[in-house]
Image (cartoon, rainbow, N blue to C red; front, side, top):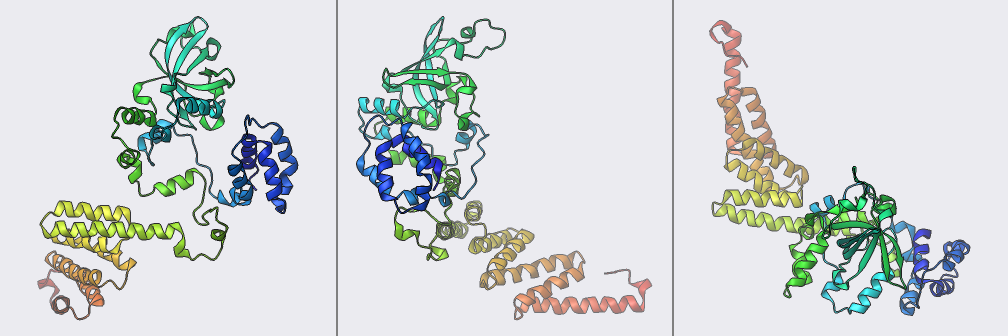
Length: 441
């Protein structure tokens, strides 16, 4: 069992969960091996009130599945990149916190924040007061790890002067800051009973997973994306969760599932499930997400191909090419898209590009009739171009290759017959009177 995950869970839920685990997992040797270590953890638990018995019972019964190390089969992601860079690219949909769309009371949200806030978390706020011993922030949102919008909770946090690093030649670190500045800071300490938060601008105040983020003054443009979207949603009552989700660039990323699986270090080769029947090893390869996703991509690509063909029939060649390219971005080896794009290239005079697409299509599906037919015709056309350039031997090779694809093609047969006679004629001419026949092959 994953000891770190189990330990974190016990720190949160406390002794009541530990007692249920001992009952439910009494025959699990992996759990019994870590019981002595977990006894110490329960004494350090910060559980201040009784949790949900149903939730704890579920965790206890499914512990062998929930904390199974084999779930996490991928390596951790390198988190050296700035959070802003990831948000700019938006590989997945960055949404406002879910409670924005729910009827959660002010008191409950405030209580949950003080319960969940931890040392090392990152908050963003606006300076509302500067004193000789530090400055006060009105907290706007959380910006690292747990993400919540908390502006309406009217929370204030103190940044003591000793938690402000010196900047430049200023003798007074506070002279660098002004009322109204946006500040990104780390949580230094939390008094859950008095509901007081102290913050720090020292990098050492951050948890290890957030050390790459820079603390201090930030611009309005650097405010977290989820916070900016929350402001827009709060000001427009017609904004629904689904509307915002569909507008997010990351929502339309075809690789979003792969990205998120890697981010949480879960492999979909042996997908986890809370249903023991789905832990069976008897699933076929096509039952797994990777195979299903491949079929979905092929289906989506085919829709693009059909749209491209429709554009082509109406003479909209640019739109047609865009659809074919989109199909191949979704499914790189989609045969129908390759054949359709190759045909468009051939019609526009791009013979070499057409040949490349037809050849790739045949590599993926050697029996594809149209790919074989169009490649044969395109090779003959290319051979005629080479004849005009007096590259007879190369042209002959293309005609023979065309006949290997379709030995009954009359155009390829005729072209090969003519060029063979021409090459033989030149050969006889060169051998008999080379001084009168300057053409060489």
